[in-house]
Image 1: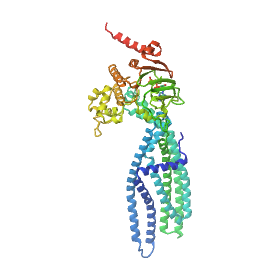
Image 2: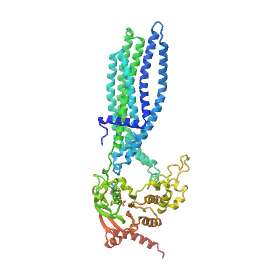
Image 3: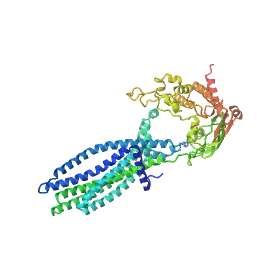
Length: 614
Ligand SMILES: Nc1ncnc2c1ncn2[C@@H]1O[C@H](COP(=O)(O)OP(=O)(O)OP(=O)(O)O)[C@@H](O)[C@H]1O
């Protein structure tokens, strides 16, 4: 990934920002343009009116138009006083509306990444962070920057024309002094954008440490192990690294800008000396000198404004480019167009010589896995830690594609199928399930958003997962907030926060979420009962068994006793299927499964013998 966009894409970026603004706030954009032109014309008009007043006052004889000129000046002054307030309001509203649309598009784009691999690429995550930063304000800032440019240009041209009338040489000198400033500012903004990209990983690390310091979930371990100062020091270390890079850029900017300011002052000073001498010789009038001073200051201020706006626009463009790249990123999994129809599962799901590694830099996790989950049967997947069971589950949900080989759903390669359609057909509980800081109802309802407000379905899922009694005892039943991070009510003073569940209770909630997804073709349960007490586990497995019925299912568990009643066991080891058969067959074969099962069974037998009386 490169840091900065090609020059060609600058115009594209600006066009995209304007298109967003036109879409989000066309009226405010038009107002902004009108006020920009008015704001640009006012200072030049005021300077000309002042010059005319001065000349008429100094001139001998009656001055009939003086009253009109004074009125004109007063009107210009009134407009100049009111304009900034109105402009500020219009700009704030423009920013809000454009920001809303930009963020909507960013998160829509993030939601369309069908797989997980993007979220595991550090450089992409850096880009995503910058894109989020850009989504906040970059397009509006770009549009406002462009209109600021227009304003500075109109004012600058007005004063430049006035200066040219008085002294063409001076006009050319002022412009000549602006060229190096322009080039230097552009170089500086490019350098700043490169610096921001370079410190991206440092910034994300810093956020990681600071989030850990404040995360209620981490607070327990942080305190138990006394990690507070360690994490704070690490966070500060990252901050110092980022500051060092920013300081270098700031220093360079300060030095360059001081020299440029000096150059401008020398040009203006020389011009003033020339004008005063010319007035002494009688070539310039008092009004001319006033106009000259106003024009030099006006042109220089406009040019400085122009250059700074240009640099800002340039920098925002570089930031906005990250946003555009995220929004326009291709899907991380190939999506067939048109996707194959996914038939209702009737034959089964087949893993055919599936090889998989997370990236070219990673080792193979699966090295030619072949087995079938026949329709209507339950398969138990067994293997030691790191054997690749969860990886296989993720492949089955098409969160990744196999590196080689294929997974076939009734003969249809999952690569040909839309991931969303596939996931519609699957009910799953992952080993690392989520605990949402939401209400009980929402925690269950997220399993099937159509059922979010269907009380009977929510209650049914809770009952099957064995948490209905627990929910009944909560202060607000299904509307109890399962978080102590937020107040239960928005206008709460903080004393009435929600409740926290135990690990096993959360796990049952995750199961309820899966139970809500009734009538799915395939049920996948990855360690669904690892955190449950013995009684709950027995109940849940009875419930899972009933729910499974004759549904096609894949169960992963280290507690081999819970897999005894599945139709067939598949044992993973070394990236391949090492054994397969029913529990009885595998025990008879006395292989790896029998050894693992006996080890577990012996543990229980020893303990029950030790606990036996007498
Ligand atoms: N996102 C990932 N990126 C890179 N490697 C990964 C990723 N997830 C898992 N791995 C690696 O893949 C291998 C298999 O992991 P997996 O989680 O599938 O094992 P598992 O059989 O489910 O283990 P466990 O019984 O501990 O849950 C491990 O070596 C792990 O380090």
